[in-house]
Length: 305
Length: 267
Figure 1 (spheres, chains in turn cyan, blue):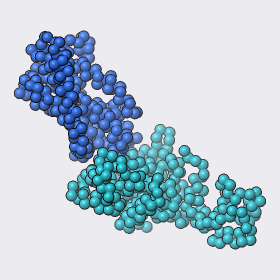
Figure 2 (cartoon, helix red, strand yellow):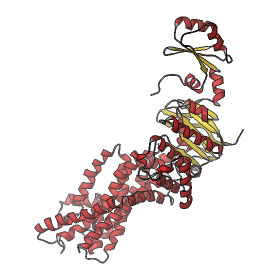
Figure 3 (cartoon, chains in turn red, orange):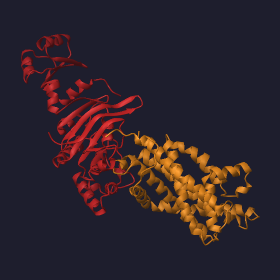
């Protein structure tokens, strides 16, 4: 496989008695888009912050481009772009000045910085907001500017921590387009998200985290196939229907979610359709299995907060 | 490649030229709001000179070491501005940048370290003291209240005292759970200094224990003393004592502030 660009071994972060990251091992390959998925508190952001060298490790090792995050934070930070979850644009400056000041932190010469800033505004479709103060931007514009800011040092690795949370579909798709085009340019991308469609859309590979551990890893398609099969049958809950389903699909996993029964099976495509032809069932729907099914199966339906 | 917990440990800061980039950020913001930052500090000492110098001063018939009352308070006014400029910049100002604006988080995602961010804040606070001190010095000079040709020495005093007040301010910022916390240092530390540091009357008029307290504990006493030496060629305490006091105290709080802020921000 491709060259490893980030390597974690027994990576651990502990706060008192709380293990935020519990001895995880993982690799990120050059040029891929790798998704970190997990419920709130799973340890995704903590992991990201250790990769960007702002959070010291408790134990284990973490190397970026062959350098230890504990020993070469500056060299690593130079090649990383970060779009944090929490909006931290500089409210004292305009859009363009935010980019210019940030470029200065990276030692980008002034004329070069201006050139990059202008083209990044074009890339994120913010040219019209060039001289506007941050307060006057919408959430979507702020997210785009954060993405632009993360690119001002022309990073080889991009860390996107929930880049589309709270955005409308238009803004979300724009960010997705940008992520795809950056991937095409060869940038390695690490993405955390709560949106499974986003992960399925963008990620070559996903790592699913829960309570500080990596509990599963693979391509979105493989994970779906492995854990939930190809199709899911949903029907309205009924005792009789339930026992019939158990009889017809002895190998299937039946899950009652609210007023609905979800039937998961590793049987091939079409099995539910033929079942429904013979036994029309109230409120029945057959849909493709997706990453959200995998996520909920692996991490449970219990609320985390 | 072993894990490092260095950042949690007390250490001497490792600083590079990047400190200036943090300073530049704050300077750029300051430039944008120059009018607000320039005129109020220009007017304030004029009010003080009018009220205390000519008003209150009219009631004071005696002279202090051959000086009129309005002359006596000049170094005090300059020094109070030096103290306010840096202390408030590095408490309220830094807290807003750190806590509300998350500016520090944004900066440490770049090759700049947290130590350099804090050092940049201190340097910027000192610059505010230099600017504020210079403005008030100009006003006092315009009133013809200066007699020593060495009065420009107030400027380096302003800068170094500014470093000291900035560092002390950032220690409070590192401890502040919320912005209201600054009421403590403001009323229990800044206000006593404002009143007791040979600002509006000589130290010698204080009860002996308070005199000792003012000399031993209050940084403003030594700032005023050095300002007075610069502006008039004399003061209540030896300039060497005050110089040493500041030279010893400043690096201690500088290192302390950086470590305390590091502990707060990097866990």
